[in-house]
Image (cartoon, rainbow, N blue to C red; front, side, top):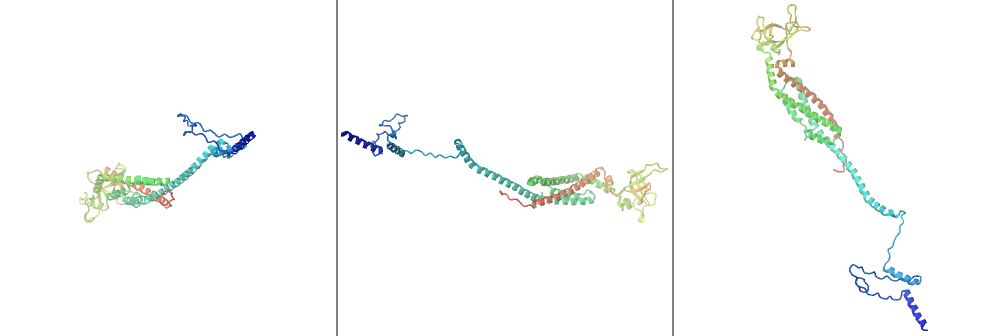
Length: 405
């Protein structure tokens, strides 16, 4: 009778334990560092892990195993693992995600860079175009700048007018005209460095025309300066030439009849061989002297009594020689008889012979310089007219929008 009773109590105890209703035996006290029994491990040695709860075998007692497993799960829950199938191999998941992240960061930066470059190029082009318009307007005409096309053209026009007046006088040396040329030279002083720097933004073809025009203006200024300096250096020679020309003029006291027609004291004697005179055929330059008034000798007063015309004229072949009686040919059509005196008509060659070699050479070069200067000035004025039209058309264009003002 006693054995069944003992067995029944054991079965109830086991049943409570299986159902988890029986209180567990409190664990033994541990040290502060977790070592069992309060034994402190030596330094450098990790304490042993705490004992894990015993899970009954599910085959022997499934209820007890389930309860023990639930108790362990409440203490420490295992991490959940979520599996996602994106259809790609496992080794491609990491690099693909990293590349996508880099692409998301780099793509906006690249787009912003491209947009910035495009805007910068547009702004640069517009700024250059607007600078070209500004330069065209500045070069065309600015009242505050002396080196504009309009001002240079105006100075060239005045220079052309002075040269035309000198041309009407056969470019004879003229100190007053040389003074005007000196003044105009100062107005042709072009600031080439400033002009060429200003013209840098204009289109290449128009820039070439601008540089060509201002180079021509500098050339004309150089020609004017050269002439003025040469004319100043030739003043002594030209003064001597003017003195000689004045002395060559026939005066009333020498020969009133020749003085009245503005003749010089030099003439031409035409000679031709005859049966009795074997002279050479040609013309001799002779010096004319006083008139004959019907007597065997020339008169010393230079004119005949009662204003009668001379009957003959004196001449000589050599300076200081004696006077020879000759006839003056004052008219004719097809032929002139031999042994007749002919007056020398005024021209540059006659004047150069009278003035002498040095004054004559100075005057020849004087005329030559002015003729070259006049031709170059007229051509440059034509270039200025064409350039002015091109610059006017360029400056009338509208400016372009620029992102950067």
